[in-house]
Image (cartoon, rainbow, N blue to C red; front, top):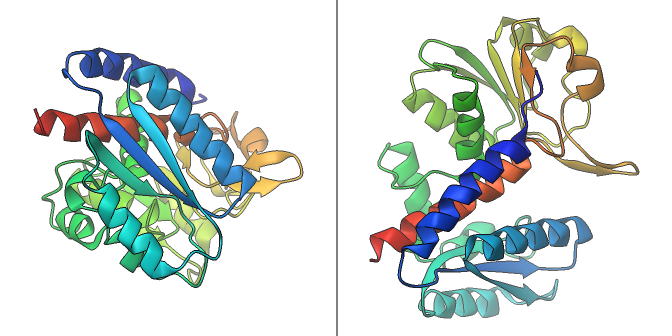
Length: 275
């Protein structure tokens, strides 16, 4: 079974459009983009398109690659108080001369819809979050659409990054799953994959998850993205795995569209708290 992320995202966005129309004001989402990576720019433009379709005001704030950290931090602190602001995100990765967490912590936690500030991460890790990180939330929504009860399931999370691995691990634990996390130092990844009911991979290493590493009962969620000559690819050898497993998400068209929808859902959730 192929998990159709675009279909799931469409359902979420249609519901959000109705909710936004009943707010009485137009919520605003600001996306801070440093540099000029064409892949990231394309992703930002997709978010802008979906936001406008949903009725959310979307503004891109672009900065040169060599922007000073103090300039960026000061500007973000000013953005926090813009009219109708209900979401502020900073596009990752940032140039190496910028302290990522210092930049993220300039965001007011109340409008941190990416759940990336230290305050938001603390709430997540203690189970006190009001919203959920978009990519992790997207993954759980995809599993929900498969009618998967996570309680007692063995889930292998491949990768321990800030946007996928870490947040999805904590949400899975909150849902009652038994979670194993694999990183670059993990030995015998293949055996771990074969023992898992669900594999979630977000490393950005193309073809990392091979047919020999999955079973007929496996559910495989590919949250990895990497640029290649043939376009965007994921962590999973999709063409050779899709007919072997119970369910697998493609790249593109899997986690990505649902992540955008869940990000906008977070914006709407913030807007509702302000009514």
